Length: 267
Image 1: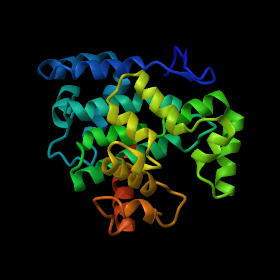
Image 2: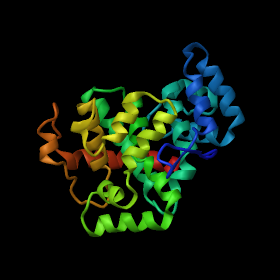
Image 3: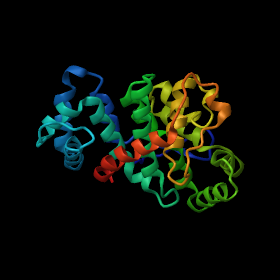
């Protein structure tokens, strides 16, 4: 879980330290030549993560020809970047299932899969990097939900009922949005700048230093919204992108099919 909280510069919210298992996974991939063996050692010390990894390797989503029965075969089949992403998802799951933000885990996971699919189709960013960005895009909601559980649940309700953008309601209620808090978290964790920049601007991709990549994240976020019958992509944003989404409903149907296979194992 996220723990060892440290006070941030706003003197209002606490920015957490990176979970230990996640930090270990990121450290392992720094040396590609030793990464596989180190991941095998890591999984042996974390049997629950190992079991989930083997189950994912046998998921129809990956369609490997042979049954994966051991952690070393799973690591070789999935690759170290996918393994890293699985660890990130599993280590953040406990705090992404908080009561004040009940849909955060499911939405984060679906957005990760959606961004990965779009990254594969449009080839603007490595799909595995896209998965991480998509998964962590709403991580700032954790801090708001943990710090002010009742008030934040009410803010989310007000945004829904008033058809307001949640980020605007957050700024009005707390003086900061989940986008800005999320960017502060990944900056504190010393993760790549593209991650913090996309998290900060995923509702306003034209303000990003990487507008097209952030625009794909914006689309992935919108395509992942389960409560909206038809994905709404704002014309003012889309007409300034270098790409177009011709059939968002078809893309979302494809996303839902792939996500259902993936989520049954990680849920």
